[in-house]
Amino acid sequence: MSDAMSERDGLAPFRDLLGESGVLTSPDMTERYTRDHRDLMLGETPAVLRPRGVDEVQALVGLAREGRFGLVPQGGNTGYVGGATPEPGRRQLVVSLERMTRIRAVDPLNFTLACDAGTILSDAQKAAEAAGLFLPLSLGSEGSCRLGGNLGTNAGGLQVLRYGMARDLVLGLEVVLPDGTLFSDMRTLRKNNIGYDLKQLFIGAEGTLGIITGVVLKLWPAQTQRATAWLELGAEAPIPEMAATVRRETSDLASTFELISASSLGLVAEMRGGGTGLNSGPGGAVLLELTASSERIPLDDLLMGCLEPLMEKGWVTDAVLAQSEAQRRAMWAVRETIPEGEKHAGGSVKHDIAVPISQLTAFLAGGAALLAERLPEVRLSVYGHVGDGNLHYNLVVPEGRDRLEFTRAIEAGFAHDLYALAADLGGSFSAEYGIGRFKRDLLVRYSDPARLTLIGTLKRSLDPQDVMNAGAML
Ligand SMILES: Cc1cc2nc3c(=O)[nH]c(=O)nc-3n(C[C@H](O)[C@H](O)[C@H](O)COP(=O)(O)OP(=O)(O)OC[C@H]3O[C@@H](n4cnc5c(N)ncnc54)[C@H](O)[C@@H]3O)c2cc1C
Image 1: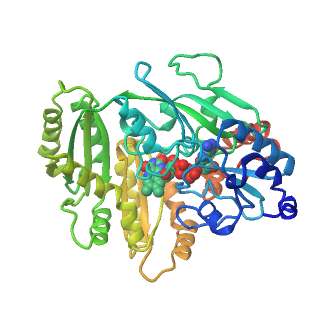
Image 2: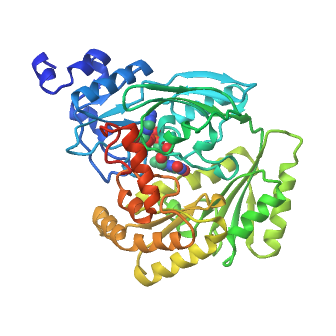
Image 3: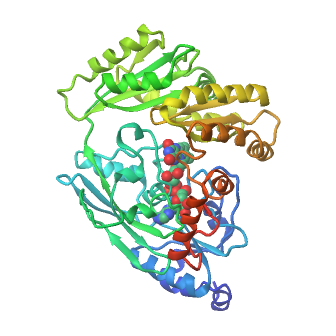
């Protein structure tokens, strides 16, 4: 890069700060940061900045303000709503935390883990494991998503039923604010009543209020026992009642209760060019897992015990209990490859719905009726962490239809009816993926005026120049 060019593009101060390898500008290098994970949006950025530490993040925020650049924080770029994609025309620099991956401390007596926010989720899990501890945050993208992104989106995942969402796992946070100030609250305290719980403001904020640089996470004792079962469901299996029975009968030791519809299982089978070795009943299937940290708990007995009433009532017609770790992994692999199965079939339009658990049956019936009436030819893929009321209600792109055109058509029509159905049942149009750039209109449509006013007030008072992720969420 010549000095003259560097001066022209306004990036010279960033190169001085971060070095050549810390400022990527050539399109072949920046494309993977500017294309969203679902390939629905190709963004545009003058440069991708790759700081190595908190002080560099603070300094680059100051430079961005001086140079009138916007900033888009980015972790693993696995988000589903375009929140980490710089918008064309906005002159936004991507701030990738991929070089900030330090595990700062694991404390087995406090049951805490302190990390840089660029740490890949699976590396954080491994650091906990190495100390005989357990980090319950777990998602299909855990090999590439990063903690800053998990917190930015308040990620959910596979074990929310028992441990809660990302925000429930955070004890401390470190954030560089839009004016470059460092808000550092990396304490490992469980009790700390000192006014507003400020860290929660930045969790789920999708990078619009600051750049998270560090986090202290809660850990649990390592899970040394697992009992896993694949349940085939009868036609009328009521999911809320089943989940409640499981919780009661296992003394709340279920960490996973995943619904997998027959059509989602079919997509995985097609992708694999045959079967999956697992079957679904007319009501689909459930992947159920109980976990415990003590060998003294008779987990297998508890599992068998909770299945008895489910089978007696005909809600579960058959069950396969995992007899080995390999069999357990095989069951999980089926669940985790549903998104790939959808991709293999031509892609899908995703609806990330949540309703109160008690309303799941009503939602499933209402959704099926809507689909039969409006889009009878479209193939459905429904699965999700229904133990916590979350469903992925996805429509597979029909053969021969253009994916983007189909997506637009669904989002302009059917999706609204589905979201209205969820809203009528007290639910949400975005359970765990957030708002990003793809659901901005929905936030306006389904939020009461007081919520929107409060969001605007917070954003304006913390970031009056709109430096942080302008265009995301708002
Ligand atoms: C196969 C697959 C499975 C998935 N399963 C789940 C699931 O079960 N549950 C779930 O919730 N999501 C799931 N997701 C979605 C996605 O992985 C999550 O949203 C994840 O938390 C995003 O992390 P990331 O590091 O990739 O964030 P990115 O995509 O990079 O960013 C997401 C948002 O967070 C902001 N952000 C990123 N880093 C920071 C930071 N340091 N400070 C402040 N803001 C920041 C970005 O600006 C953006 O708005 C899945 C995705 C895939 C591909």
